[in-house]
Image (cartoon, rainbow, N blue to C red; front, top):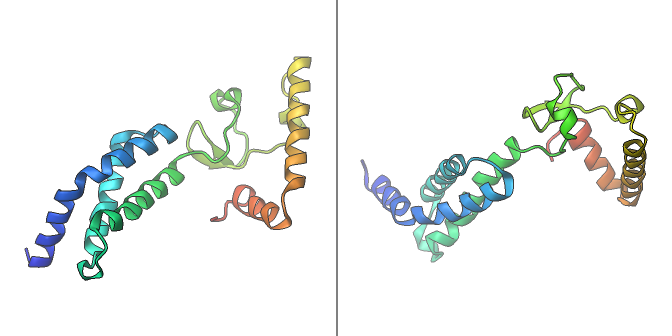
Length: 161
C-alpha cells in the first residue's frame, strides 16, 4: 500500500463512528435495514476519504458527512416507494399496470381510472375515495405549471427528478 492509501484507511477507521447515527436515522425514517444503510454509508465515507484534500483546512468529519448522507439517500431513493399504494392493492396479485408498487419494490404505473377507484362496493369507502380524489385534484390545481410538469415527468413517465 502506498502512503495515500494508508492515510485514506486511517481517516476511515478514525471517522467510522460518524456513519452509524446517520444510518440509524435514515433507517428509522425509511424502514430500510439499518445494516444495509450502514454499509452504504461506509461506502460514502470511503469515497469521501479518497477525495479529501487536507490542505483546505476543512475538518474531515464535516467534509465526509454530506458524502455519507448522499450515499445513503441515493440508496433509499432507489429502494423506497414514492407513491404508497392502498394495502388492498399491495397485497393483491393482480397486475395494476406499470409504475411503482411499494409492496414489491417494482416500477409499475398505477392507473387511476374509474375502474380502480370504484372496485369496492361499500358506499362509505366510495365516498371516501371520491373525497380523496377531489382533494387530490384541488391540490394538483394549486401547484404551479412547473411543479405539475415535474410531477408528470417523474411520477407518470418515470424520468429522473
